[in-house]
Length: 315
Image (cartoon, rainbow, N blue to C red; front, top):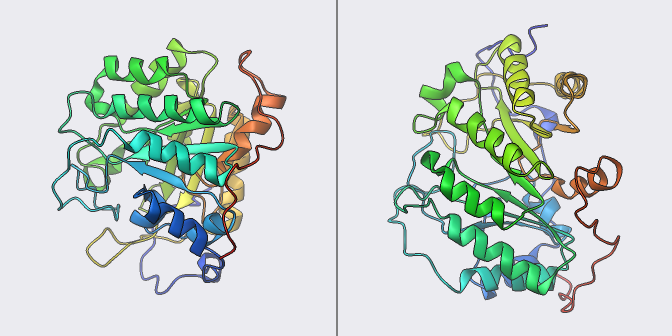
């Protein structure tokens, strides 16, 4: 199968990529503004913002919004100067988790290559703050590669997140064009070390399709991820944020995404989320089903309902 062999001349988005205008998102946006928090939903122009905010969930973007890398696929700002870490940010993230009543919290960050630990201590502080307020909430951290600082990775692992997510993003051949400051083998090594150091941890990675990769290359990335015992895989369509970003080489059909889901499951991933609109944290709370049906450790499984102490008003 050559599901993702590149083609050119695509004009306009196909029907399966059209999303409804955001509905009832004002209360979440207001909460984020009140707490002075950033989300990757907004900063990276995620197409699922309306759905997620309407369901009163968000992926928190810490240490940002300015990034120290200029990846040509990403809409996060790299022209602003990164600011010193804010010691109050972890408690504000935890307050948002509590007020939203999140059963599963996802925290990601910009790349902070200017910091010796890549920002590991801020991830640790956020995990600790959430655990104090919401001990039953599962926590997923979507981390950068930390420039290969494995001691910094150990600090994050010691805080015991439920899921450690690190995206490989694309196939090795395209790294120089798509992720010039990244390193494919380094990303695999990060996932491998995380699994080795905490066998009870769920590891996760994501790949964008539509940048010119071939079917054979997609399979190879999947095999590489399984080789380092990655548990969860997300596959989604790359969308060009603006004319200055990398162009879309091909729109992959929903049927092809379903094919890749089946391939991933056959290769042994515990969970594969694969669709045109899938992003790294899309329906991330589904990991709780894995904890119940494919447990990796004695870590407690959250109760079905975690009630917010501070209900948000209707939008």
